[in-house]
Length: 176
Image (tube, rainbow, N blue to C red; front, side):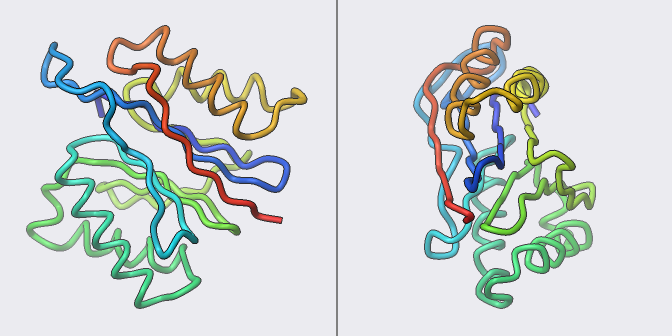
């Protein structure tokens, strides 16, 4: 997925998801302050997306419905959403990826049927995702807290990836 960077870090009793604000159309930047990270499920879940904005909003709405159906069960809601995403004729054409987290778990969701939990509490998606992921892994053992790691890692990704900018939006949940 081009045109964004989304990073999740779980450390020190907090989970943080951050993302940049750049929206690109081909080789043109059409918006620099998009909000690709948001709260879901009355604030108990945070999520970020990479890919088509309309597709991501559709998926966020569907995830909200699954969270209402399975309250307090993020993993179950994500598995059910991903099943629909793979089998529903309309949904399977959606081009987006999502990172979502609650107090207990963080997950990557894709239209390929993936519901993945990171081994080390760090995961990233989007065109600058690998840059942010590498930076976050390098900073994970430092004295920096989760939010500081996300901010610094996204700044590093913005310096490298032309589809990522420095307008960062952060959402945090205390897990302890």
